[in-house]
Length: 241
Ligand SMILES: [Zn+2]
Image 1 (cartoon, helix red, strand yellow):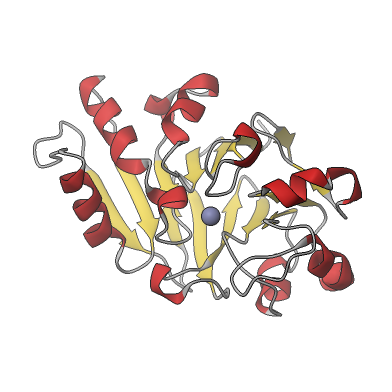
Image 2 (cartoon, rainbow, N blue to C red):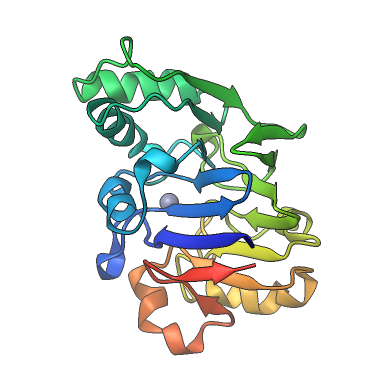
């Protein structure tokens, strides 16, 4: 099997265009990994995938449109009798924030029949769903503890910006990737915490990735879709690497 990347959710926080929150499924021989699991992700997962096959989740930052769906996924798995372990990797405060969200939702994960663990991602590879995952600096809302991800799975390298505005960190993040998944919230609007297509066009020559695919599309970016400098994902887009 090659490495298959499925965009389950390709929307921004406001679900522009009816898109689901950030949620990208990576399937390879060694396991099944989600990159981000936003608040509206569970219906996007159940529409196109089997939640019971997800071995691990890697989270880019602590905003609800990127990790808010994890409690719903865990609750669904509890009631479906899951016994397969679930590993979740992300920023340092992920475990505390997950506990807060679950408590707020009235969910109790102290008596699950499956083991789950939360690991802090960093420069040293963490093994999640048989993939080596590292975290890299990006510029986004600092209180969300943002990082980009590099994922080595099935002999391929996938880089993912999470949410980020343009900095040279993205050149390092994308370096040598078979696929660079970049957010593109805006078409031309300047935003201190998000990318726009103009920045990607201007700096694209510096990106040393074999393929660049845009996600996290806001309404303004969608209105200019035909002018985007790279192909854009939709909910349901599948890539074979
Ligand atoms: Zn976001």
